[in-house]
Length: 243
Ligand SMILES: *Cc1c(COP(=O)(O)O)cnc(C)c1O
Image (cartoon, rainbow, N blue to C red):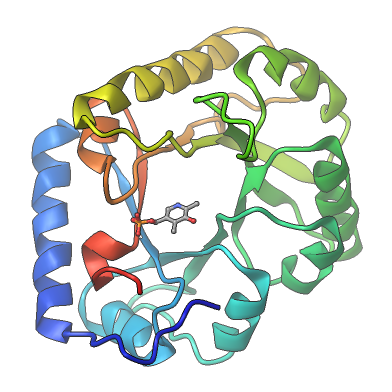
């Protein structure tokens, strides 16, 4: 876990940050509904609960199983909701799926048949259907997880019989760009892939549910919103820089 000890969380700033992101969503997404996923890795549970109780946060993303499990029992339910929505967004080891299968609402980082098979198996065991996103390695970076765009048709074919998975869409982490306008081409390409899949008749995709495109982080959410993103994953923009 990253060190959180010396980090100061200013609740008033967090409130202001969330407000200002919501305004940007309104102006950049042109009326599209966009999910603001608060990425809460390294954020203490008290701060997360404040954001849930008072600042309108209804969905969080964690990228490490250990950290999610440590926080899980203490997390609040958003006012007026049945439950807090929790997404697993980081690379997930197959042997850890069993710890989170009954705790998360979506797994965004599916990038291997082996992982998909294990999620399917555990979901069956728990009598549930798990929502998943396929992570696309849009920058074709060798050190990063995700399916290469050209490998996607075969991947879709390989996971098509996993009946306890519901494929909801795509997730991508763009390569770090020095010039923020360089993000546009990665997000445009990811959006085009989503459109391509949803217009083809891909077996086992229920098109009425294939509607999520999770792209945009603190350094890139404005560009992602311009390119059709309907879920942005923000950590440091909301909670301040991690150490
Ligand atoms: C940490 C993380 C984020 C948020 O990163 P920020 O730059 O702090 O907004 C988003 N997505 C994934 C997969 C992450 O691991």
